[in-house]
Length: 220
Image (tube, rainbow, N blue to C red):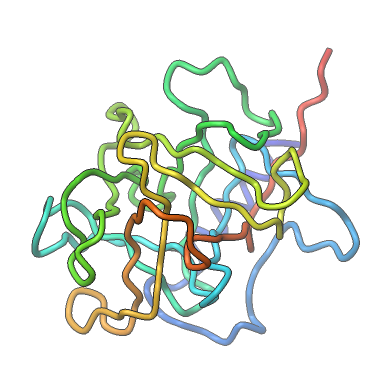
C-alpha cells in the first residue's frame, strides 16, 4: 500500500508546475476525505500552510543573496506547486519508522521533496526582517541538528493530525518557524519571508494541508 502512496507522490512531483500560482480550487490532495480524521506519519508528503496568511512553506533552487547564501525558503501564495511539498522524517539517530504516528513534543525533520534538502535554521539574519534565517541545506547523506524542529500541537491534541494547528521550534536556536506580510521583490517576487522568531506569536502557527499521507503502521 505504501508503494501506491509513493507512486502518487511521484505523480504529484512530476505533474505540478514549478513556482506558478494557480486557482485554489484546483488543489490536489490525496488525504481530503471529508469527515475522516487523517493522522500524519513519517514518510508522508505534505504542504505546510501558514495559518494566518494561508501561504505554503516553499523552497526552490534560488540562494539567498545575503546571510548564509543557502537555498532560500519562502511563503508561496499558490496552492498547486511542486516546490511546496515536504517529506516528514524523524530526527537523526531515531528508531522511528515509516508509518509511525508523531506526538506533540517530538523532534522531526522536513525534507524538501524536489531538491532533497532539509528545512534548516541558524543565527544568520533573515533578509527582510533581520530575524533568524530559515533555509534549505544538506541532502540525502548530509544532515545535522540544524535540521531539527520540535513539533508542538496547539490545543488538546496529543498526536499530529491534518488540519491541526501546530508550531515548529528550531532546536538549536529556539526560533519558531514564522512568516508575515513582508514580501520579496527580487529573489522570489511576491513571496513572503519565512524566518525564525524566539517569541510565540500568531504568525508562527501552521497547519498540514494538501498531501499524500501514509497510513499508520500497525504494531505487531
